[in-house]
Length: 488
Ligand SMILES: Cc1cc2nc3c(=O)[nH]c(=O)nc-3n(C[C@H](O)[C@H](O)[C@H](O)COP(=O)(O)OP(=O)(O)OC[C@H]3O[C@@H](n4cnc5c(N)ncnc54)[C@H](O)[C@@H]3O)c2cc1C
Image (cartoon, rainbow, N blue to C red):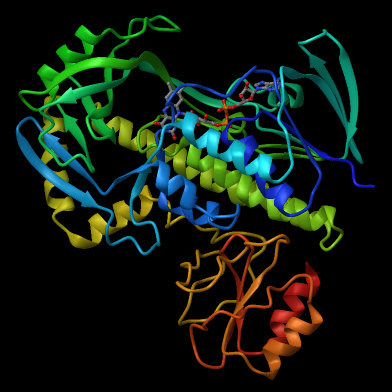
């Protein structure tokens, strides 16, 4: 019998991974040392690409998240009292052309409900204390807080989704290279009146002193983030409402009044990442593998997408459909994305916190010029919503053709068709005209191909799309597609 995959950590990443594995019929154990899920709003936004991937699972796809959240449709950039530009998300080619504002506590609640419907209960107050990775599995020691008992578990696979201070990462001695930025940051979830933009729009205010970012959470409730000179403390004191109001008065629009704080915090920004996400039978995902500036709100989304990437591959290997080599692509694909996210978040933070007045003036002029260009605005929106993420250098990429997505490129979900990768098994999909050749492929690769053939991109050609919605290969000759599937 297949041993359960052991997932350490039931944050948004561990929950996403467990939900995906469970719906693919893979036994899974999820342990978390905390007694309950977070009650903090922490990561506030689910971007378009994450919603597309969530849409592949659960009874109602992404709908429960969309119903619970609040749609942010644009981001305004302002310098002093000058409007620099606006990036709208309405033109993003996705069924979800917006950032969905949803406190992390709610995202976790909805994922927990999804997991529970798959018949998996989270084992709380159970800590992964130590482990040993062997050639063919992992031996793990779990510590139960209820009675102090230590349980030794033998698992085939261990996934460390145990956050920024990951025990799994430490146990692997995986270097977490990077830096801590020399600034304190204030975070406040508060009520405000006098916000000059529609409640569906966020605002980034560039000021001589630093940056002030305002995200709507729901009508009348906002997340405010601002940088402060470094106090030198490793854990800066939590912000106060007066401090937040003073920052708003100085850097933000006039007449904005903050009241009824829900959560006031301070933090320092770390930009760190491991070099490899796979260590034999152990993997790292989410904050355990990468942490970065919250600028751009990509941290949790990147982690959840690590989980989506790993789940279908692990499921195919555990089911015996594919060889273990498939799993190597997890690290190369997701580590490349992690590098990009780290760089982009660092750049955004640096641009927002420029101190030199000449550099600030250049930034403001360049920002206005660039955000005046439609192509630039679209590129920024695609990056922000993560629909531009792809795997152009993936070892899984096969041949390509003009006229459709390149190998490793995202395939836009097709209205009226089930999302690729939905259902109870990880299946590739064909995008082509239904012909004798496609019927033959479906017969030959019964367990690996989705019976629903989606509309093609070009006459006489077949695109093969992975269970996570990225193009695998394209060819006019069905034998090329068959060869690709056989090699898996
Ligand atoms: C103040 C703050 C604001 C943030 N704002 C944003 C934002 O605006 N946008 C954004 O994208 N991200 C934001 N983040 C980051 C975001 O919260 C993380 O990226 C996200 O939580 C990562 O999810 P995860 O599942 O990888 O890790 P976590 O959410 O940290 O979950 C890890 C889980 O593992 C458990 N665990 C740890 N060690 C063990 C062990 N040894 N055994 C068993 N269980 C263990 C923990 O109890 C926890 O439940 C913010 C974070 C903070 C702190």
